[in-house]
Amino acid sequence: MKYNIHIYGLIGSIIGLIHTFFRMFEATLLTFLTMENWSLTKYILIYLPFGLCIAGIVIGLLFLFFQRFLKPFIFFIILSAVNAAFLSFESLYRLIFDVLPNGYFYMFISDFFWCFLTISPMIYFIIICISIKSLYNNYKKTQK
Image (cartoon, rainbow, N blue to C red; front, side, top):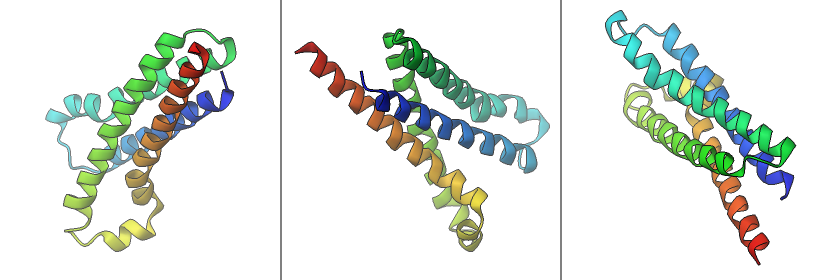
């Protein structure tokens, strides 16, 4: 198999991990959450995407270096695509219903933090989809 397929998946997972760090940074700095609901929210907002990104990176590296673990790699790359789709919808929702109506659009354009927080899940999703498509094409070529 070509290495660029796995490198696309790793780059996508790393972008997803960076996005998760930005979300964690945002959630700890902003005080919109109370202490009562923070314990449940941190699992949904931080730990679940963080764990999926780390698992995708680890399995991708194992597959890249040892050329084994194809089924776990495909499983985690598909989970990573679902995670990327969720993060993309969530960031678009926040952009449409939080940033634009409240007049924060200038801050959104000028501030790298907000811009990256909105755009990175879409980049993550596109790169993961390229990796899945390349894996599928490569699998079809090897079956012939």
